[in-house]
Image 1 (cartoon, helix red, strand yellow):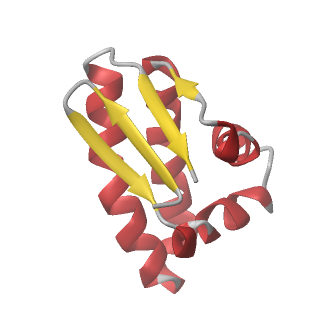
Image 2 (cartoon, helix red, strand yellow):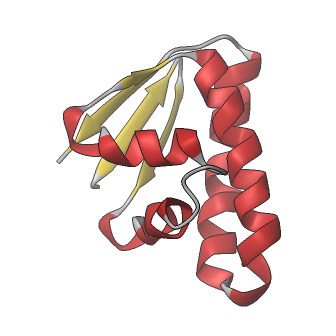
Image 3 (cartoon, one colour):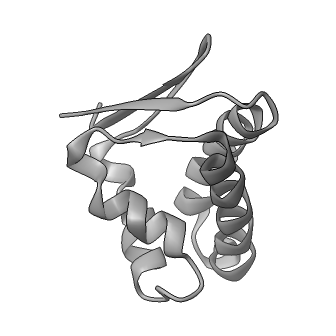
Length: 100
């Protein structure tokens, strides 16, 4: 996996072929600052706090609303990531990330 994420007993990933979601977000930096920041830190194995996870939930929902109708792959990736970030946010878990 390109980017593995762990929070408490939860885990999720963003594979190499799924990085396109960051490219979509990068076109609208002002709307998706957390996704853009996450992409800039992608290969530095960042740690994300629960508040940042909550902001990522909202940015992913917005990205889904704006671009999901025309991109079913984006829908699939976002639907898989949303529960992970939501649980990390609500559970106040830090997310440890590991990059290839």
